[in-house]
Image (tube, rainbow, N blue to C red; front, side, top):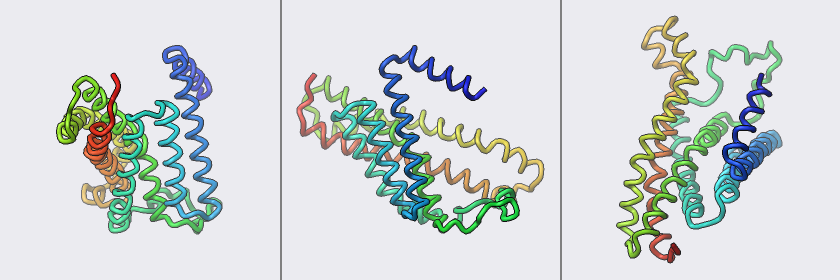
Length: 252
């Protein structure tokens, strides 16, 4: 059945999007390769943060520059994404370590030595979880950044002579609608993923135990970091767009 669904997906993409859809599929395949490189690097002893950074850079570069081309819009979006990652990485790591959210929850009882798993894999679970958070975020960051930079570009292209402040204000206005949609999308994705766990907890545990469980807190942490990342991307991308678009002549 999975193969049938995959075939339907490939067929719909190629029929509806044509060459653009083909590029999207190639991008998806390259991104899957980047994830394979990530796993290989970590298994070879590379620090998880460095491995995740390499994978994220490959994913961002391929998604932005191969799929959308090299232009002012993608360059501004790429710089914004890199800036957001560098700023939020230490902050998210600090929050995660302080709340002790890394590692495998107690409910994952199947991860036991008796079942053939090895608990001491020689990888820092703290940094591994931090990197995994950014890997989950990267798609939302790309969507937010490219949406803001593209919309702002069109405004500047049709209204010549805009200053830095005026361009930044326009970018922030564009970001308002994008943020509302993106935060709802992230919220429902993570809630749907946690739904079975929430139902199980509601039937078996008290409210105080639920809100103090590691599984629940990990889910809330992932939702919150996703929303923070998307929110932070908008002003960062707005600033970068304002600086780049105000100094470079945009040809209509």
